[in-house]
Amino acid sequence: MTNDGFALTSLVITHLWDEADWKGVVYGVDPNGANPPFLGILFKNATPGRQIFDDWLHRFGSFDEFDEIRIAIIEGDIPGKGSGYTVTIGSDIEGIISRAKQEGQDVDVRYIATVTRSHRLNPQPDSQFLPGFKKAFQRFNEYLLLPAFGSQTQPQPDFKYAIRKRKINFRKAGDVNEKDMDSIIFS
Image 1 (cartoon, rainbow, N blue to C red):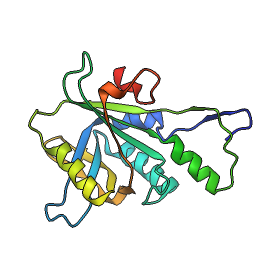
Image 2: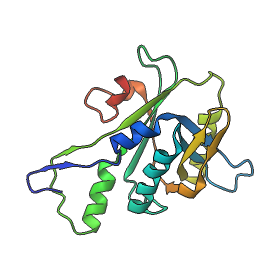
Image 3: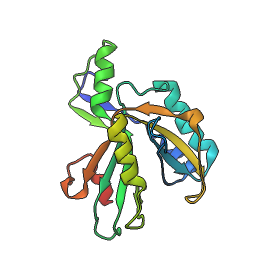
Image 4: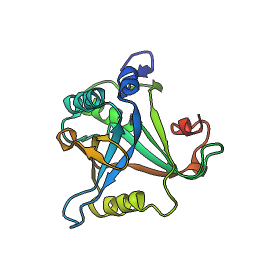
């Protein structure tokens, strides 16, 4: 944090995300209902994808206590993008400020810049993956965020890099405006 009221924070290291090549999202739900669901970020390239999560594990541990990793799932149509939903990943400003306060850091920040990544998904209209994940999340009030590799039809989640989270932002595209941090969905 700075004294001039400006801070730059980012969990997204651009060159690693470019190298990892984000291809989709994978959801998993325990059929026995004993474990929380998972949300897997499906990467084409395993080495940089694992590096992203290894960096996060080093920074946060296996539990993102302050919810500094911001995940949003924004459902609804976006002109020119087909029906479906968009997933965004970036820094959660409230979480970062909460952690800084607990660590005794000055948080007089009026302007914060951050980098966010987004991915548009166009599932079949009858797909039950996202609704199943949402239902399991409501039951457990937590989920695991992890990398996955392989293809959409045969994804391979890597639980070694799982980070437990309690917060996810479920939104509607119609509620996002141009000044919103999720406005990246319109790019």
